[in-house]
Structure formats: structure tokens, C-alpha cells
Image (cartoon, rainbow, N blue to C red; front, top):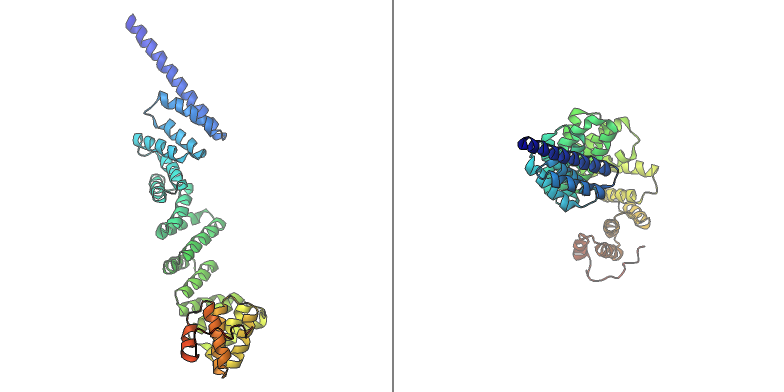
Length: 350
């Protein structure tokens, strides 16, 4: 009889403990969902005291601690939960968030990779890894996720593609970007965003022939596009097809006569054709209207004026160019001017 009573009493205790555990977990999750994560942590504490070797309350408390930005303690809870259950998907996902918030980016990357090994078709996880891959310059992984995410729709894909290409441009990873965009174009050759990215990338790595070819393809549909015409003029300039470049620059200037940067580009084009007076005129306009590279404009105007026999003011232009940061100006000063140190005449040519 006593043994039977002991069994019944033990059963009642277990039922009571389980009921309490269920209550603590249900209430804690409800509070966390309502944004009352500080209170939720207290209920999860009580659940853990009842089931110390159970991963659900540890995982739930870790998630709540992420919500209240207690990231270091959250990581401890996730570590314990993963020790108990190594394939606990959400523990890796949320530990990745905690690591990222504490700038432990490599640990975060490892966790999001593990999460996606367990749930490879999880869209949220793919987005997280895509963003983190860009931060860590893990370009191959970012590209893989970009392609995977492309199935979600054109508008969201376009935003991710811009983010992807912008990150690589900022990191100056132009060769890799060209390779990725060429892969994308092989699958979708009519995509204009891909082609324009490829053109700018080819310009950065000096592949002017390819840039010119792609610009010409786009100009078939957009013959009046000034941006594409400017790219074509630049490509022709660097390919030493100066006469062709000059004509396009002049066409663009006729449509956009106030662009000081175009004036400077046209002036340098005229220099290559030994049209010294016209080069002087256009570079003076560019300087007056504050083009974006005044040091280079002063250098070019100095060359034009020197060839017009105006040595004094040519040297003044080169001194100004050197002062503004154009190192090549020192070569001209050393070769054609009496003194590199002299600053006389710097302000004569405003």
C-alpha cells in the first residue's frame, strides 16, 4: 500500500511540475510575442529551473535576450541549447544575430551557414547570409544567394542586385564583378541593368574595347542617351580614336552646354588633336565653371598655352595644378619652367 501511495504521490508531483513548466513556457512565449521580453525572461528562468537539461526554454530565453539586446547572455543560452541538441536550427539563426550585433562577423557567418545547411530553403536565412557575405566580401557566397533569391520576384531582386554590385564597386573588386555580371548576362542577355554594370566595370579595369562594344549595343535602342554617348566618347578617347571621340563630345556639349566636366573632357580631346587655341578656350570654361577635376584641367590648359608660346602663364597653370594635387604637373615644371618652387602667376588665370 505504501509503495502504491509513493508512486501516486510521485506521479502527482511530476504532473504538477510539468503543468508549471508548460505554464511558464506558454506565458513566457506570449509575453515575448507581445514585446514584453524582460518579463518573458523571468518565466523562462522558472522553466529552466524545472527542466535544466531541456533546450526549448534555453532557446526561448536566448531569443528573448536578443530582443532586449542582451546579446552576450543570449549567446550563452544558445550555446547550452546547441550542446543539448546540435541540430537546433533556430539556435544557430538567433546566435548568428547575436554575433552580428556584437560584430563577431566570422562567428555569425559560420552560424548562418550551419542554419542554411539545416534549412537550405529558408528565405530569411538566405537574406541574412547575402547581407553578411557582402559585409565580409565573400563574393562567391553572395552571388550564390543572389541567384537563389532571384526566384522571389523582379522588384526585390533588382534591389538586391544593386546592393550586390554597389558593394563590389565600393570594394573595387571590378574583375570579380565583371565575371559575375557576364554569368548573369549569359542567362538574361537583354537585361539593361546587367549590361550597364558590365560597361562601368569594364571601364574601371581598362577594357575599353568591350565597354565600347556594349555601349554600342545599348545605343541601338537608346541613340540619344547622353550617358551612353559619354561612355562611347571616353572609350574612343582611350582607344586613341580621337577624331571620333571629339565629334561625340561636341554633340553632347551641344545638348548639355553647361556641363563643366564635359567641357574639360572635350578640352583634353582637343589637346590630343593639337588644337591648342580651342583646347585653351574649353579648358578655361571648365575651370571657370568649376569642373570636378580642376587640377587636371589646369595641367591641360598649361600644355595648350605652352604650345601657343605662352610659357609664363603655362607655368603658372602647372604650378596651380601641382598645388591642387596633380603630380604630373611637376614633370612639366621641371622640364619647361625655370623654378618649381615659384608660385608667381598662380592666380593670373582665373
